[in-house]
Length: 136
Image 1: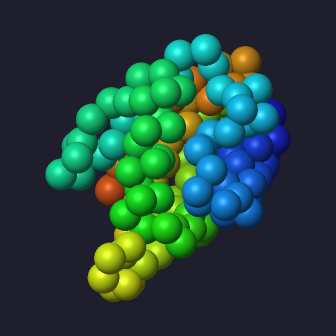
Image 2: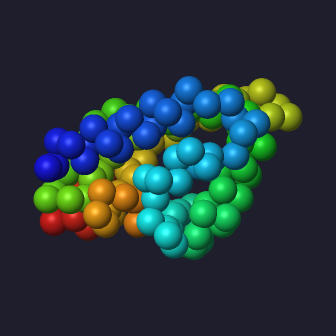
Image 3: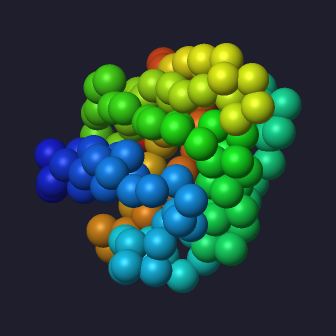
């Protein structure tokens, strides 16, 4: 089960990176992978730290990222799983929309899955803390 969950999460990044950033994310054809009221929680150290509840709020968060970094890519560097939850150690990379200045950031995304769907994604800047959050 855990390898299947890792594959599910990693494939989501592949699909994300393959999409046009001018389109909303997650798109309607991806909603089958999300629970009815999912959450995305930005890291507490992030200046824009907040919990985004529901697909509309999550789409708005992604839209802000895409506006600021139109060529944003998120690559999985490593991934681990407990019975059902996944930690993805990821690298964000892109260029500022106005400045062209490159950005690069590495952090953890913790995926809390319910019945094989994304219920919650939580960001951590500390890999060990992310792993502990799912019992690893």
